Length: 98
Image (cartoon, rainbow, N blue to C red):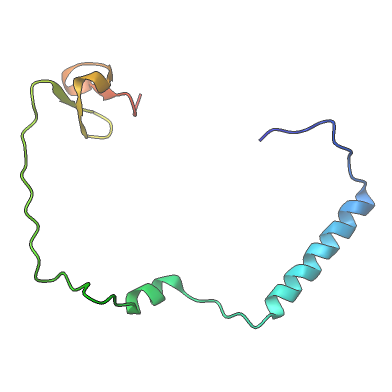
């Protein structure tokens, strides 16, 4: 993170006042009438209309690795040979992992 050394520095008294203001604001927030909602629990109980996919089947055509592709030894993804950063064969590493 960049630091701007030209900005005026705050004194200990100013820092103390700021922290008191922050504590007062936090206390006010804690006493507000808001209820914490567990997002995970809310998502489990949420049902979208027409979202029942239990009867659906996914059909995907799997294509074998081509001659101009390689499998990265770090992320195990198949990439085109233009993404090869270093290595060959079982030691090949893609640009993203290099």
